[in-house]
Image (cartoon, rainbow, N blue to C red; front, top):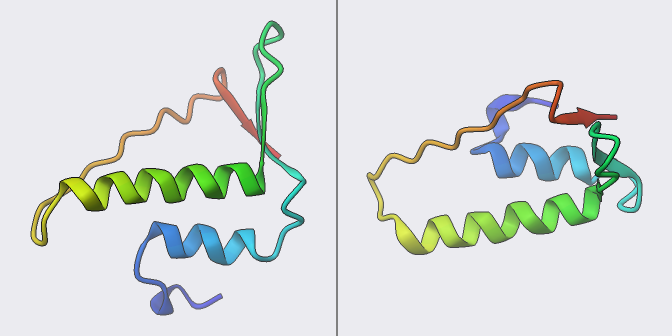
Length: 78
């Protein structure tokens, strides 16, 4: 994969998602009382929804910061 050919994080994720089985688990909670999982397909749909909302609410030239807590205590990536 040549990162120079990708324009944003959505393209980067889509590039990786296209190599995966859409039904495989991408994310799962480590909290024993919450066994929620997200497949590659579900994650991709949620990313596209978020992208749409951002596009509808910002204009060209605006800066947008996405903050994600990558604490191992919250989420596990397979």
